[in-house]
Each structure stands twice: as structure tokens, then as C-alpha cells.
Length: 315
Ligand SMILES: Cc1cc2nc3c(=O)[nH]c(=O)nc-3n(C[C@H](O)[C@H](O)[C@H](O)COP(=O)(O)O)c2cc1C
Image (tube, rainbow, N blue to C red; front, side, top):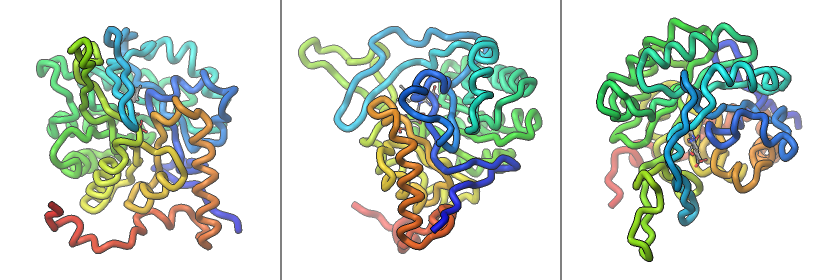
């Protein structure tokens, strides 16, 4: 059976629904001997800011049960070096390139996107709002619904390409943020970025990360990510990229069933760089063996008493 795997977002067609997540695949040019990026639906680049950033001092990675903590601190080469050194290679790929942008002011988000718009080879933007807002004392933009809406409103007129806002799960109701960015003109949301976490070395009685707390990712967060995607999908009509602990095709299918229109594979790339391609093939295989001719038909097809699951207390 031939299975349709592609989907459209705005006017851009993606060949399948599996992407690699920001910060876990570099700029797409580093692990080509381990995985064929042309088989992916898209590559989401490491977050780019206007100027290069060194990020936080070590130690900025710690392994945890079924996951990892990171406090990389948005270390990146800066948008100018990206355009000069990375974009020429990315243009040679068949897959779609989504550039992820991080900034410390609303104006910086606009400047980075406006500069990228002047160059070919970029198919869309993902906006990382889990960034310290310098003007508001370093609090994350993404935990303030008004700032998140403002960023979207300011960026929307600057591009005709898909504009995806990557939401932080470190808020009470992600759906409130999804609704705000939809109203402000976003084409999609990515759910979820990392969850705040911490680990302690009891021998030295010190935190395992130099920043004390960091972002938790990997299989440990998958049930939370699924519940967040489900919450957003039930309350806001906007395409969702499901992210969080995906390691297998079945994991990815879970996200599609609860309402994600596509998925991103993150931490798993560090363990097995070829996983995302196998996940894409596995989703098509699942559809075929279940007599489904379009992977899109899986999206939101969970059989559940939704009312009960959303409204009932479960403890
Ligand atoms: C080491 C590391 C670096 C990351 N860097 C970024 C980043 O620069 N921008 C961003 O939006 N998300 C970043 N993320 C978050 C991931 O893209 C993803 O949202 C998160 O890790 C959850 O997915 P996972 O459990 O599959 O890793 C990073 C994650 C990790 C583990």
C-alpha cells in the first residue's frame, strides 16, 4: 500500500512528519555520515541569536534516569556565521530547513529573522521563547503570555514562511499560550521545550550543573509532553509539533494520535543519530499495516472519552 507521508504548512510541503529538534542536530552538517538528512521531514537548527554566544560554563550536561539535564545556555555561532558557513551546505539538501531563533529582546528576534529573510534556503522559522528577557530582568519570554504574543505579532509581518512558536511547558496552561500565538498569526506551535529540573551530587553536596537548575529532556518527559500536546490540541485549533522523549516510531505515533501534526526527535539523536529516519519509516509502516493511506489520518485520532480525561480529577 502506498502511504502518503507528506503534509503542508502554509505553502510549504514537508516530505514526512519527522523532524530533528533544535539543539540536538547541530546545524545539520555534522552527522551526515551517520544519518541521511534527506530522509527527514525537516531539520530544525540550533537556536541562533544575533551575536555568537558561548553559553553557560561547564558542567552543563548531566545524565538522569531516562533522560538528561542541560544548561547549554543557547551557545551558538550567531546568525552571520550561520549564513556564511552553514547555509550553503543546507541549501544542497532536499529536506526542509527550519531555523530556530533565540533572542534576549523582541527587537533581536525581529533583526535575526529579517536578516535570514534576505537569504535563500530557509523554509520556515521556529521561535524559541524559552529565552531570558533582558529587559524584564532575565525572566523567560515564554512564561509571559503577553510577551509571547508580542513576539509573534512583531514577527508575523516580516515573513510569508511558516512561523512556528516553540512553547515552554514551564507554565500552568500551555493552551493559553497556544491560543495567544494563534491569534497573533503563528502557523503552528512546538510542544514541548525542556522542563526545569535539577540533580545533586551527594558526595560533593553540589549541584550537577553549574547553573544549578537546567532543562530536562529525553524519555523521562514523554508522558508530560503527551499530556501537554493533548491539552493544546483539545483547546486550540493550530498545528502542533509534538516533542519530548521520542525514541521509537510508536512514541511518535502516540504524539500523532493525541493531536500532533508532526514530531521532532531530540535527545535520542545523541544516543542513536539514525533514530529519526527509522522513526519516519516506522510511522509509514504502521499506517500501511493498519490500512491507512495517509499518515495525516492518524492525527488526533485517539479513541478516548476526552471530556472525562480533561475535566476529571485523577488523584
Ligand atoms: C542539549 C540540548 C540542547 C538544546 N538546545 C535547544 C535550542 O537551542 N533551542 C531550542 O528551542 N530547544 C533546544 N533544546 C530542546 C529540544 O529541542 C527539545 O525541545 C527537548 O529536548 C525535548 O525533546 P527531547 O526529549 O526529544 O529531547 C535542546 C535540548 C537539548 C537536550
